[in-house]
Length: 172
Image (tube, rainbow, N blue to C red; front, side, top):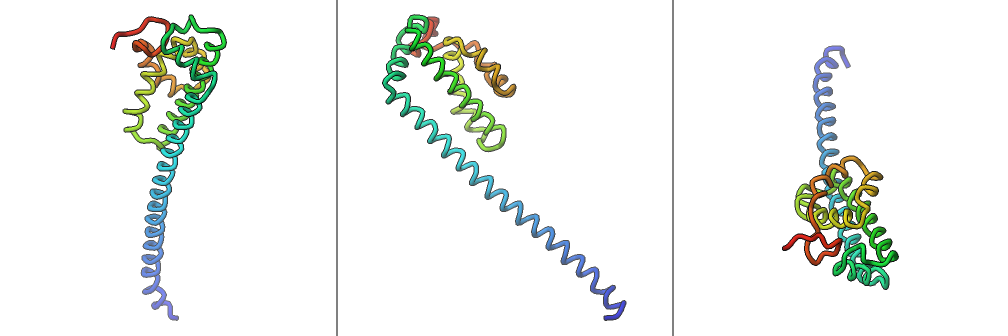
């Protein structure tokens, strides 16, 4: 091939190489989007299964179900030391689980709708209970700063009447 032929073909080869690079980037972006969608769907499914398993465990437990029932109708301080310990342990487990869920949200695996609806409702339920059980401050010290910041607006919410606790309940 002559020198002039190479000069004529070279720009076309560069263009073809650039088009191939752009096509590869577009393909990778589409693959990444599909993978992210699949990962989000998997995260939702696992979150749902974990919540279902948690509820079944609490409902079927010979020790926890009665302790929870007693807590819903009596001040926390009036429960036996065993019941208080069981409930504090469950409260801390819920706190760690919610921190993990919030981390998934921060990582882009759960969307804003999840946090603005379900997650915030869980915070409204759990934060007053953690406070009532005396585990709010100690539990939060072990968790991530962003989760502690998420909890902050809920610290002063009262327990709702019929939701257990110290007797300092708000009327519905």
